[in-house]
Each structure stands twice: as C-alpha cells, then as structure tokens.
Length: 291
Ligand code: FE2
Image (cartoon, rainbow, N blue to C red; front, side, top):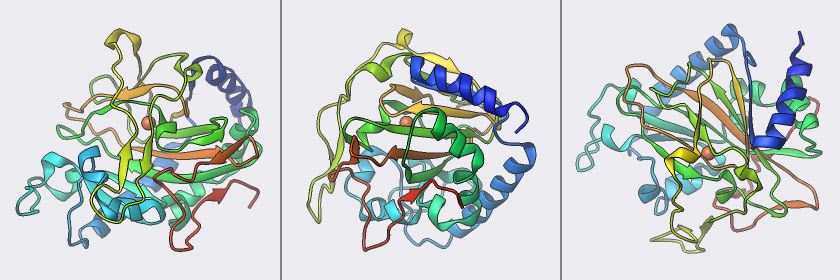
C-alpha cells in the first residue's frame, strides 16, 4: 500500500492523543473523479423529489423524511437555496444541496466500495475496533457562497454507544478544504471530555420526532484549531472530539464524503434512543469485514 500502513499507524497515535488525525492522499485523483461522477448522478436523481427538504436542526426534528433517511438515500438542501413558501430553488440545482444521506454505504455500490475495503479495515485495526459497524454515510456539500456553518458538536450526540463511547467518523475531502471554504476545526484533546448532550427520539409520531436533551454548549473561538487538508485526505474524527466548520463564503466548493462507525461489542452497544435506527426491517448497519 505504498507506505500507507506506516502513515496509518502514525495517524492512529495522533487520533488517540488529539481525538482527530489526518491521512493525506488516502484517495487518489481517480478515486475522487469516480466519487464525484456518482455524486453528480445523485444530484440529478434529487430533482425527482417533489418536496424540497431543508437540512438544519429546526427542520430535522419534525421531519419524517429526515427520520426515514436513516435507511435510505435522502436529499437535503440549504435553507437559503429554497423559497420556503413556494419550494422553488433560488439557485442552480448543482448549488442547492447541503447533504445526501444516510445509507449511501449500503445502497450505492460506489460509496460501498469506498467504505468497505482493505485500507479502511487497516485503520479500524490500528484504532482497536474489533467489530466496526457503519451506521450512516453522507455526502456533505459546502457549496460556494451558500454552504452553511456546522456549529460545535460531538458526533456521539447523534450516535451514542454504551457504556463506552466507541465511535469514529471517516471524513474524506473531495475538494481542498481551507479556512476560507470551511475546513474542519477541532478542540484538540476534547475527546477525553464527557458527552455533553444528545439528539434522541421522542417516541412521538408527529410534532417533534427528535429532540436535544440539553441546550447547545458554548465554546471559545480560541479553543479551536483549523485543520485544512488537500483533496483525497482522510480525517479521522473521534466520537467525542468537539469540532465545527464555518460557512463557505468563498468561490470554491468544499465537498466531502463521510461515514460513521461504532464498535459493536459488549463494551459499546448502540443506544436504542439514537435518532438513527434500523427501520422497517431494513438493516443498513454494515459490518466492515473481508468481502
Ligand atoms: Fe461532526
């Protein structure tokens, strides 16, 4: 794997120390072309949806489409890209999407290939996951001039395991990510903090379907470190590390493919009130094992 094994070992140590780590050139130029081609197919598919779903906390908590996207390929648009009265797009279709999710890894062969492979398995081995199980996958667009901010959060708020939190995000840059177009920002070492709040099912069938357990936590700007990366880089994200990203007010896109995996053992069982559950017998939780 051309020196990749050693770079993964170094990254695993950084991951344990800081709660995040970067592996450059994880994907090749050809891989990225392959993925972007598929994303463009999906963008085309998204135009067939009658209702325009907006991505954001205010919209997600009451939205059956969001809840059901756990085991589907759902399309979510930027709030400012849609006229909320008429549902009409205010921008060209290739700029409106915020996110596609959450079962790309399971339902789409191209994303399956980039989620379950030898390189990914090697990383799980180095970070000591024995039963890695992917629960969700997303394309995150942060399109020029419209891509929204992601406020500070811990990913385990959405995907908790118990009694221990054993969760990792793989975040692959499909464009160069810079401070200008909204690269990831981390509080180094915050993965050693407790889980501050959760995003859980309410058990209701209408109204608020999902809720936050406590209000948003405030952090200081100077706690965050910007982590710019070249396209093709992989960023590993510990489930407890606090991270965020700014709006993209630049002229360059900042697309990424990301998936999350927990370690499905006695030590870290998937919580039953996480918003994302296997629904309608459609088990899209995918064990990362030899093909
Ligand atoms: Fe995150």
